[in-house]
Image (cartoon, rainbow over all chains, first blue to last red; front, side, top):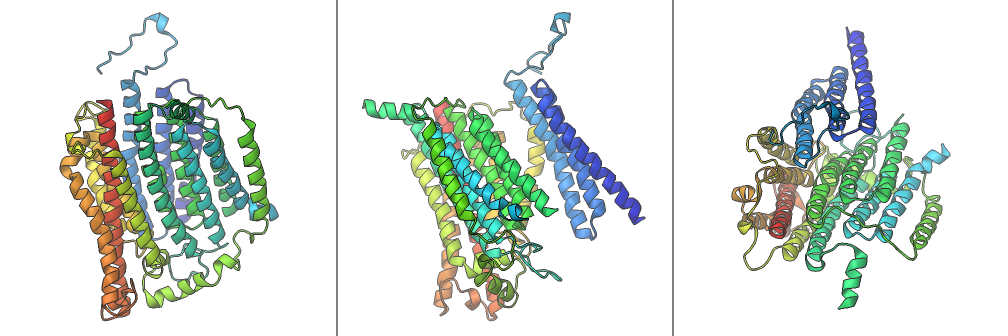
Length: 113
Length: 117
Length: 330
């Protein structure tokens, strides 16, 4: 049982680290603000949640598990909100998503959305 | 192991010099304050590295722990961090007032306006 | 393994500092400063300096970038290229000083050795006697609040003085202070947006966490400074969301100023009580019949004083910056 738990937590750690790396790579390579915010959102929400879940599984006593769970809960609140605040600030500042296919007449959303 | 025993201190010196370079080679007052911040943090890293004990635990007394890291640098640096933020806030308040009086925060333009008086 | 983490974190710190030199534009510089603070906090955790990491994360990655952002909101984010006639002199100076300093570090004891001179004399005495004389597990709090309490009083006075200095510099003396700040719409515009709702859910928990850190500082990482910064940041969050007049209605600036002074007064009065009890200034063993209980009481009271002072000063500095910003923009 405990070895299965350790294996699962190792898998979660690897997945979280992989998502961290790809998030950082995406942040560097994506062309405009909004896609970069998406890459970072994946990093700060999904990757951190996976790593925290892995650490919860690896903890021995109840106290670290409860604290990690509370950190996870707080992160679930704050990370998506941070991504939303960033995207909203960019939109309100006038940044629009970069679209290379505008000649096909793709409508841009109205400004008061 | 020889380089690694001095790596921390050399990085501290590098950071100190990078912060120092920002202070003397950049004209924007806010950038200078940022450079000062880097300089201060490098000193913190120096003290904390000097107080670290290999295989020691955090200085919170617990059962079954043999060696603790040195708590005294932690106390000093705790004070230093708070003093650092105090001086940074006063510095930034001064920058805001300078902007109100001179209209700019670039050092060269401020000196020009001073000499023109 | 720990050495590996150490090397990687320090290399990232150097990379961030180099990026700060090369980047033009203050907004990016502020973000890099915040990253720098967070990396320093992670490095301090690797060095087993948990209290210091706590404070650096709260201050270096929280309050300092906030104040920098408020300044840049006023002065603009453009950074001019310095056209200097002697562009090489700073580089030369920095290289020479750096080389001399590195030669100086070769005399230092190897990193991590337990018998370095820094780890002798006073520190083992603190580690051995804290259990018997003070009775709390967190040795850093014991040293900060009891053995070296006089220095901590000086530190509380420094942060108080910084608050006074900022008030003197930024607040106009003719009563045009924060109460008259007419604010344009807050940045997000809509009152029930996601950021508003989530922040209003989280602010009570942030305040509760600040209280937890304040009183749990005896048993784990924490204490007055960290708690004060976290407490202030909850109010600053409310101020950033709903505007300065809203947060000024919650705690008026006069009350904040009085609280800051009360915090320092609480600290100093504890010391004077020790004098009246016949012992040295800030010797808490006279505060109760049992010396160890007296130490506990003394540490809790002065940490409370420090927490109140730090929280009030940071809130007041935020008020001064925000009001100045609004006056200049309007």
